[in-house]
Length: 635
Image (tube, rainbow, N blue to C red):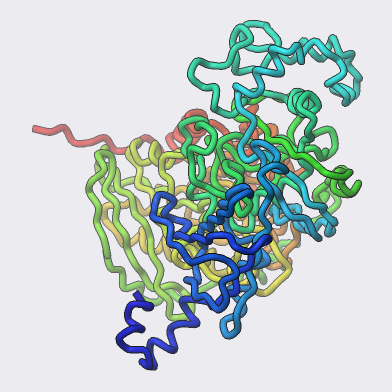
């Protein structure tokens, strides 16, 4: 539109001032030159390609937006991807001079079938929780464009892969015991006792799913298949380089986190910079590196929350969960040994630390106080389209900075007021999303079932999340004033939400519960020790963070001063909040009396099944808040 307008008002000062804010001037080169260059918005994968011209393209104006790029030249493999992080960053910070953009194309005859080329260079993982690792020098390498499929894996099974020991090169160490090859193979059977993935039957994959990712495979099976085809499981470094987790804001929303099951290869348009698909979501992907007795498995799966794309996970190499799959890499030369080495995340030992004494807690608590000034609530939007609830968007005055913020209020259509009320603190994906429309009620947190049980749910849009996003880009504790100030503001936002609840006649002022999911469960010791009006709390997939923060906002320091009845629901194989190192220390540190707290540990990873979550949560709320008010019979 701006280009069209420029034809009529070329010297308009407002337009001239706007160009650097919405566009960049670039020099586009390709190796070799002479390629046709096309772009279109990343968010509209089915949109029409816009032809920019043939390279080299000098002083070409493009939108300051994350774009899909396509390049074509005879004799070379077509390229479709996005800009890599270095060039994308250059676009952000260089508004006044041309930015150099370069694409290296691959000759058709030298391309690896089904793989894409990833440029090397110095690289350090962007994966949250592993970003402390040192840089590693990567050489150019290849990685599968999509996850290994059932059809591809079937060739390994049919060729006797499970009966040929030469493909199984890594010792089978289980519970400190080395298993023989024959013993280990008895662990890798399908549903009918035949060799093959845990999700198969009679040595065959489910009908019609040849192009779906193979799942239900252990790390050992993935490594054996890699030997069979002459490739390798990628290191965490190589996988992260290809996945571009730095671009999660664009890639993850277009990837399979649907909760409905795996999808065929490339069915979702979550395209990586170098042409990969499904590195976010669909199936979790085994990587080479170990962490203790576990092996890393990255990217998240269709039944996990979006932030698992950027969260590290490591599991027993013998586990064969129905969302465990893999893709492979191919190296032209031996990778740097550091990239293949074990990776141990930095972790605190809470057994060797002592929380602050009560006198100091009383002092810290004063920084969380706020004046009970007028809230001036306004119901901005009411949505009655759901058969189960009415949703309201209410804005109120924050307790700081002359700001206003939103509360999402969900009122059940089953039951009658005054409704018991659950105040929610979400997972860390709320920091990355820029709209509260991204809140998933029907997900792991089972918020929809809480509402359908007859309870109201209130979701404050806390400082730094959804449409209040700012410069805080991680939920992990930091020893910075930025993080400290946000924690204090979160507690004030929570307190103001309770203040607002207590002004409404349709919400029960006494029967209040706190519900924290993952990040919301981890930060709960601070929230619950400051805001004491809750009668019950549920912490789903939470635990102590291992990163340190300033003492006045450290979760560990606040846990002993939590006294509300608290239910913790966790996964036994949670790598983010391990049972022994994180979950148990939090549970044991809570000041709640032993007979008023409960820790449920399920045989899952970070995300327990929603059905069990809902049952445990509803039972807990029924016990401590009482049964909900039943609906008045209709005449």
